[in-house]
Length: 260
Ligand code: ADE
Image (cartoon, rainbow, N blue to C red):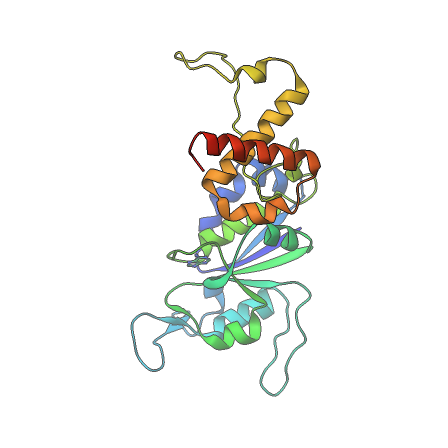
């Protein structure tokens, strides 16, 4: 899978893309990450990319020329004009923006199905709306907070999408963890069996695989009920008969402890 990142700060991506799982995936040729410096398409001697907002007000706004140039020349995508509208590009061009649809695991899965994605990192007060209307496929936010720019958001999305690309994760299958189902993960324990006097749940060292699986599922439910009750409605629709029974047990236990 190929990621193209349009940014004023390509160096921000150098560290994160070299390390750990993403670094290995790039070395193995499973993913490619190409950065394009929007300033290379800036105007004049100063490579200007921004300007004052029409109508006044604080902050600067990305001018359309440089971003259109970066998309057309950097990505090889033909963009249109008022007279000659262009067909949609072959791959999504995402704009990182707090105005966008909020990114989640379902969107990560949807995006991972494309062989190529472009991510445009905004800055300043925003982008001239003609860029958003005529060059961007979709606006994406990583949450209801405002970052200084789109770069960290782009890294989050590249990370979450790349790990769904086949073979990027060496061991774990991404299907089994938090948010593939709307269920938080159960707590994990490893050695030592006692650390500073704190033990581990007896059941985990019992060697009884069936009981361990039930305990884990119930702890996952307990966490979800306590921390993310908003996920429960969606989750309940996906439970089989046995899981439903375990949910009822947990709800009963929580209520009898007065936590519910
Ligand atoms: N740029 C600034 N804030 C952002 C956010 N929350 N998500 C994506 N891009 C952003």
